[in-house]
Length: 357
Ligand code: PHE
Image (tube, rainbow, N blue to C red; front, top):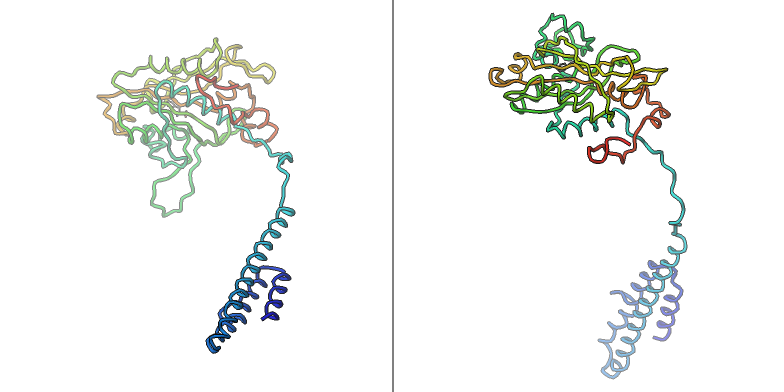
């Protein structure tokens, strides 16, 4: 028994890890371990022999079990010490530099426009950029072969010869959202619809993709006077310049009657664009009283309701407000330009907090 004791106490002391410790436990005090087998032999002994051997074997078993437990705890402590020694990090190190993005002027202006019109009770509506030609044209009183269809430089989606579906276009304006919003909400209604539109056109003030915001208000007695007030109020709030000057010019759109285009007084002195001064006029929107046929197409009875609508170029008013002379640069994704004209992500425009800083 002494030999057994010596063997296991030494082996436990020298065990290098938990798995060899477990092997030793099985060998010594497991079901078929050496000490356990010895205990089984107790039954064959005389009562006197058993009286002497029994307590000794029990003491040996207890001693081995406590040695195992103590060693196990020791190994765990050592493992933890080792982890603490090797796995450390310096939380005082400066962090890696990350590129700071900026908000594009178009996004900024869209938020500003939304904040101003929301204050006047307009909700935001949306429609698809790939539109079928009924929403983009027919419902807006532009039937096939109407000359206005040719005036828009429309991008048509490819169609196979035997394709039965209605022709689809990249929407040439946000006006189809008028129809979708009327279908969805009915009258009365007051919405704006900002978004991307597409026309095949490219020069200093035109890009094939640009942005408009549609506005529409339908009620029992909405008039041209309300349209004029809303637009003037908008321009005063948006440009934050006292001397904003608007020019309402009689015009023609198939979907409004009467119609007016609105220009803003500005100057283009040596590449610098300024609002409210100079002898130039920049066209910023088309507008008018909604045509009865358009109300009908949207499911609204033109004998009971009337409304105004306008479509404004977001990029145009961004150029004017922030003095950006060339529209094409908006969509070049030149980081230097974006850093110069971009806005901080933390400057959300609100009427009370100031639209832009
Ligand atoms: N959809 C017209 C355009 O893109 C603008 C407009 C909208 C005019 C609403 C009148 C009413 O030119």
